[in-house]
Length: 172
Image (cartoon, rainbow, N blue to C red; front, side, top):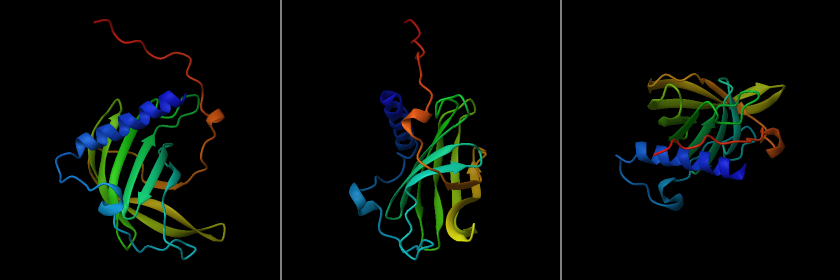
């Protein structure tokens, strides 16, 4: 199972790197991701890192490094392993107003494409508590279904269905 997760992650990030290779290379480490002053509901600096669920049933693993936002989005349908239907990657930056602008690419999909997205991080009142939620404000290029994300618990490895066979390679 760990090999499948590793393969999905490597595929997603390799595709995003290939799609974004036309621009200037980014410095390694945090140098390309300067700190950003956005406060979360507790007044502390906002960190979007972690698991998020989208209103398209997708599971999104977000990593925030300073102002840089990365994610791998995986289909998450009952009875299937995450990413079985589609995988999407995103790279963007967040500004001091909580606006995230970036590029996405479908890595695996029956209807592949790419484009740009503008997302807004908002603090909403949920059950009387301030909660960060994400809203897609605009997009260009390939049409995608997700318009809203909320934090999700990290799925336990036992919640992922076991894959008993992998597709065999076509004979040469």
